[in-house]
Amino acid sequence: MNVFEVLQSRGYIYKTSNDEGVKKLLAQPTTIYQGFDPSADSFHLGHIISLTAYKHLLDAGHKIIFLIGGGTGLVGDPTGRDKSRPMMSEKEVQKNAVALEKQARKLLGDNSNIIFVNNADWLTKKSFFEFLRQVAPQISVNQLLTHETYQRRLEKNLNLSLLEFLYSSLQAWDFLYLFEKYNCRLQIGGRDQWRNILDGVELIHKVKGEEVFALTFPLLTTRGSKKMGKSEEGTVWLDPQKTSPYEFYQYWVNSPDVYFERNLKLFTLLELEKIKKIMKQHPQEIQHRLAFEVTKFIHGEEAATQAQVDSEKLFGREAAKAQDVPTIEFASLPAGQAGPGLAIEILVDSGLASSRSAARRLIEQGGVKLNQEVVTNPEKLVTGEDFDSQSTATLQVGKRKIVKLVLKSA
Image 1 (cartoon, one colour):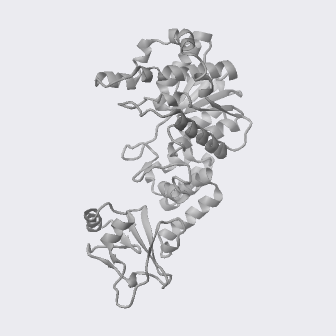
Image 2: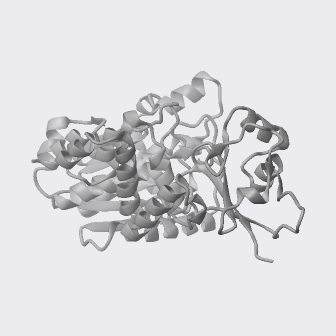
Image 3: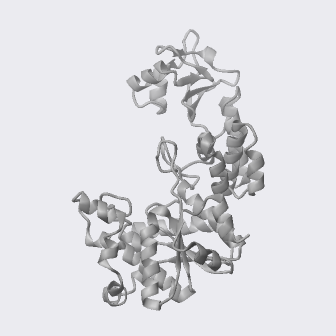
């Protein structure tokens, strides 16, 4: 099967500049690139689509150019934004670029068909007049004004700086540079990058008279129409120091049932026939298999296994033994003392609730559990009787927020 058909059958392809042209291109080994903005020092969950797509493309014998936007990052991608990004310093952009390349190398492994480049290596070395003479005459302002972001800014009378207006032209210049140096003929990216990528396709056609191609992935959202990769606590990062493997695993365990098949196809490398069999299982088994496979892909099998064990313990009687759960310690209780205190106060002290009033509302709404039992009394006291033989107890809000309470030995 042509890898184009593989990507299509798994749901990777949102739009291409020429379906038949891309399919024909991918029938033989070719060079493909995608750019990544160094706006942070870690990739997040939304980038996994690119990583798994790379695996399919690499297995088919293609070369991947992994571009870190150390040059364009100094400008800031305005796509989808109603106001300018805060300007980042060169030092911060470089620091993030180094971190992203290190992380990408670890995630993708040692493969001679992966080329890492940083567009700062040419954009910051070429002169502005070189850009004006080589690129600017080939870029139509009329075409730039068709960009959804630019149109929205202008319609709402929001500021659009010249710097932001030039961003897609710099990205187009990247494509031209990579075409000239590596014969790169396909740029891939999220569907929000469609117009930016197409600018590069059109630039190469005008300058070189050659046809190159664009392919975009879908931007996935949750049931609440939020961009996938965000949780109640914020962005789900791929760096284990920013989002632990346990927290990462829990994100997938709590994904809606309606997205199970989609997520298995896009975020794991399981064969489609295997996915069909998994989808016949009980929803709880599916969600844990999904969580395990994605966590294994990003953090390794050992971390995925530990996250799975901890997750299972968290929702059983052994909840307090899980290793990767925030812990609050209390002094051992003197004779006659009721316990650590009001559940409301512990919720606030542990960060599970933002205030006493918020904690009270959570209890009244049935959203708080002590040792897997729903707390119904807003004045509930946590007493020594709530701790097991190992002097531990668990306090939980919703499905994912949980802390372990421990009584220290005297």
